[in-house]
Image 1 (cartoon, rainbow, N blue to C red):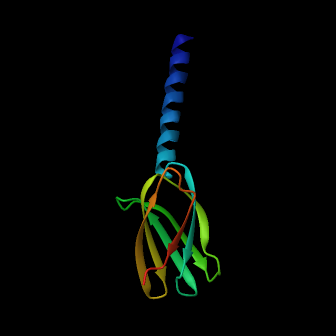
Image 2: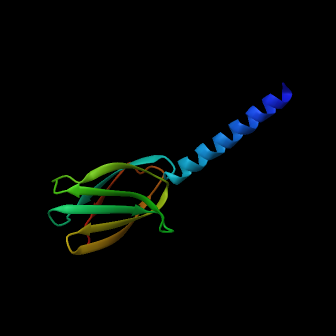
Image 3: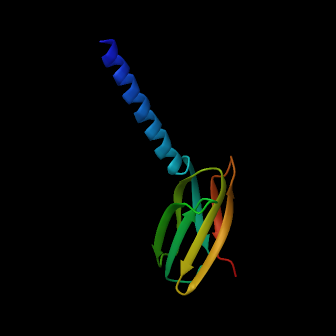
Length: 108
């Protein structure tokens, strides 16, 4: 009986560790609304990365007038790569402890 209980506890700890690691890979769970303004008309591809270059999310907007979404990210620096037509832009945004939304403007 004790061996079975110890085995169950070990499996539960491994499962909790795996869930914690997956949550960390998702960006930490802070939900922020990001909106993109000023990009050329048409298709806009947005890639979000952490400061080390790891992919967090990739989204494509197909010619809509409003381009925005809610994302789950960790506090700190967020690297945003924008691609529209033949043009590419790269931005860095800071997600602070009270950040709820950001409007990112296409750099000229």
